[in-house]
Amino acid sequence: MVRAARGLPVAVGVMLAAAGAGCASPSGGGTAAPTAAPLVWSVVATPAAPSGLTDLSLAAVACVSLTDCWAVGTAQAAGTAQAAGQTGHNSQTLIEQLTAGVWSVAASPTPPASTFSVLQGVSCDGGGDCWAVGYDLDPTGLADTLIEEDTGAGWTIVPTPSQPDGEAGFLNGVTCTSAGDCWAVGSVAGSDGSSATLVEEDTGSGWSIVPTPTPPSGVTSELDAVSCPDPSYCWGSGDLIDSSGAIQVLTLEDAGGGWTVVPSPSAPNQAPSSLDAVSCVSHSECWAVGDYDDLNGTSQALVEEDRGSGWAIVSSPAPPGAIGEELSAVSCVDAKDCWAVGQILEAGGKSQTLIEENGGGGWTVVAGPAGPGSTTNQLAGVTCVSAAACWAVGSDAGSGSSSAPALIEEGR
Image (tube, rainbow, N blue to C red; front, top):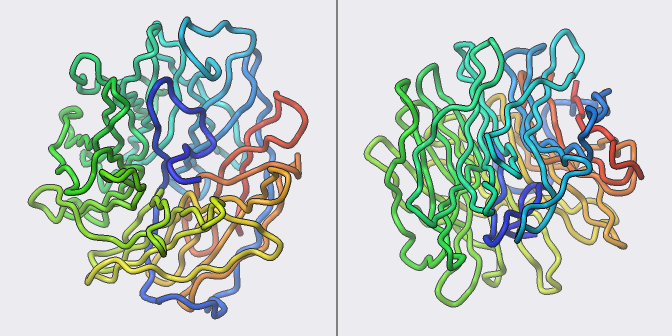
């Protein structure tokens, strides 16, 4: 669903963004078979909910190496009372780590006095430093940006720039191009429910807010994901609400001289559209994925490509038997090997995991396993360490148990 968070709770009093990460390919649309044999995907064992936590959900994943990965998200705190005036559940950050082939829950700090905190993006800079971003709510329900860092000795909360009084801040995605060069994106929301894009950068001396333009037709705008093929070139993707109330895709570019709005096509008939993930392998090889609402109000996958001359919509296949589908994340190992994940929408409010691949000949649906619950599950994040190894993470709400672990799948 357009402007729906990646399986994470909706914050108090404001509309939240989704999140993701991405990839690129020189091919256009079409449904030709990929040039390389697809990976075989399987559900892997993940840790049960720690004592006092329920409803584990993972939103993003990043890997330092084939055997060293991090996944982040949220878990509901069991038996806790909600703060006055809040809606939804009291939750706290969730971080899981892959070491020696086994996933385990890692210690994740919660901001002092916070009643609700989530992590929505994670990235590692290649120098032994990893970052996770999201937001937390104070006892009054006001949201503030949340950034956590791990330099090898455990995760700690790091300072982030303050928002003006009365404004809420959210971070949805993060990427690091090298040690000491990271970007995070999201939105700043006012008390009237409107929002504007938010970009923060860390060049090694702390995070600071970077100016972003207001879209010409945008009354409300947000960024859900960011990708930088090198330190001097980045793309951000998300959506905006124009003066007529229509939800349209939004893409911002920084080619070294600051962020600018770049035109990108929305779905046919100007249907409500959002780009939840973006990634580039070079200045002229980028993909963005998300979804749009069809005439029946059902979500359908949206895929766009930029080969350096502008964004264009690319066809993507509809899974057999689906009434709709959503793509939440995308990852590439090179220009001819990209993966996207999300969920297949079925009758009765059920959903199943969705995995698609573009091996240079167009996007195809790849067989993937259902979660253990087998009735309602989805994938929200994906990363590929090599052409022969990928990880995807999400949630499994159909297990019938609130203490069920998060969903992690491996492609080999």
